[in-house]
Length: 397
Image (tube, rainbow, N blue to C red):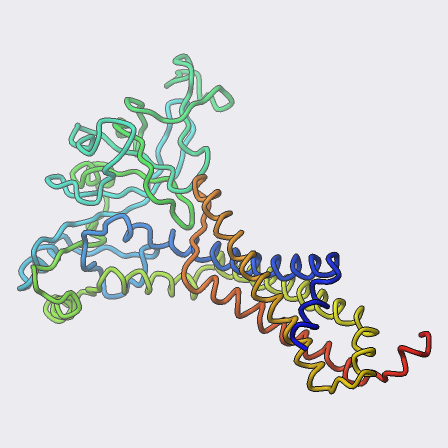
């Protein structure tokens, strides 16, 4: 009966291809939606991913993500360094600023201040002077942070710093080495344009030294947002984080745990995540509907063939086995094609900074989702076959 089921499945090429297309579409849609969601979540902790050498992140005890932060006193850095087991600890300042371009337009930035001596946390590759670009006075490195068209400055010199008001609707170009901006009426010079990891939510970024950070944001009494530290060789990062928390009263957490907390914070607090989850669920429902309908139509249109088999003595159990054999074959082939197409699509679009990250659970959930829907559709399709009277073959109906 297995051979008969396979021949019946593949005998009608049109129906067979239609069934595979439906299952492939569902597997592709589910896997792509989950990978798209995972890509956005990965952008949420991009700050942590950019600094892989940091074993532990230390912050105010109320902070649960890289997005919503509150600063600490600068003295916290010395307290953290005094803990036994710390190899080195580097400060990271984060603040929001508004910069004015040469034509008078303005743009909001998230500014990241890095250690003057080591430049730990700064972009290592940029279209400028390299990693030492920030050592120049008043210099900054800009990054689009996942935004598009935000780093624009006038193309013509006559539109730069005009005396007759702003020049908004003029030809523009991307910021480049040597361009100037104003932050709180203080001059900064672009010494590089980096291509760091995109953010979620997207936001333009400015990297600078801590000394320049303090010059640009002088009003804040507390500016230290994070301390990135590396444990001494042979020291457990989990134990060291616990010791730092106990000794300083601050929150110390390993980088992997910080990434998980950030994702959890987005899931709990971000309205954008809710919108994306709605899109994922809608994509799954559409895929489920397509697969279920295609399977039911395939079985329903073969009722006469099942009636012939039943008239020849096939039992209900054998017919059920045939239907579910067809279901499993369709699921295996269709899911394989759908997940494969999703992986290929991901490789193609990842080069254009699209938020796509296929993690291990995406293909698994995609396959299981298709399998569950297909089994459900198979159970529904079995009922008319079981109730079918063999006489239908000879009745002419």
